[in-house]
Image (cartoon, rainbow, N blue to C red; front, side):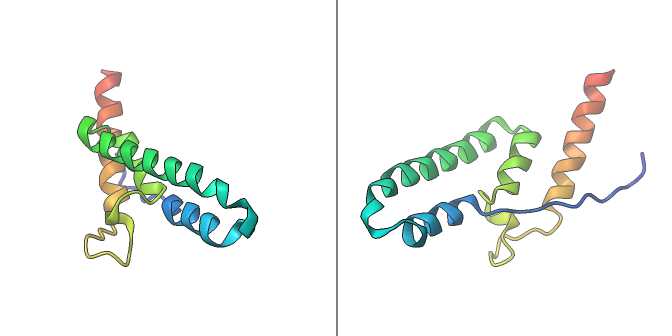
Length: 99
């Protein structure tokens, strides 16, 4: 199998929800802050569950939406090869299912 690099985009969903709550909502729509916060908390629970079940596809998705510090260039946990490591695990897992 050839060693291939894949382009990945990271979007920080938690920060996006915070930006919406803090700056995008008109001051009279503060009622939406609570549902946004609840959604953020559910995403964090999903990220914790992904670690527990150790599914590389779900872990990769959580990275893509910015739920882990390993994909945040400003974090000391940052690992620029994180996506490639997860993709390798996914490829290995897919190869095992094809047998």
